[in-house]
Image 1 (cartoon, helix red, strand yellow):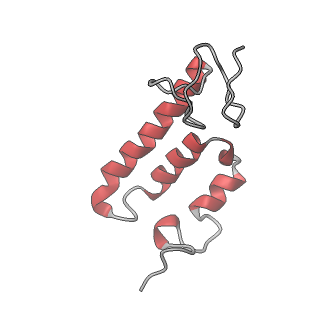
Image 2: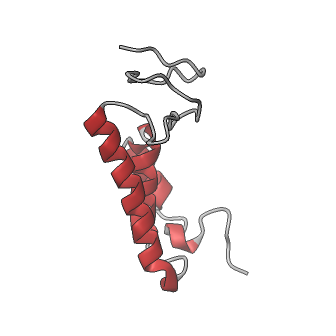
Length: 105
């Protein structure tokens, strides 16, 4: 049986360029959107070759969310809920405090 928890082959195996090691070294752990985008790009088709297109679409989904966040200066989802904590937010807020509060700037 192949290793599926520690250093699985579709993440690069136990090598210096294993996906999570690169993401951490590049400082991409500051944004879940960017982290997931690069993760899906780096392993596209490796876990399951039949799902390469699905992996690329997932990467695009995460990239689109990050671009939207940067363009609007907000972490509001279209449905009016915070992307970070999933709580309803007032219009005009720009940041999540992480405790369910959302100051209006």
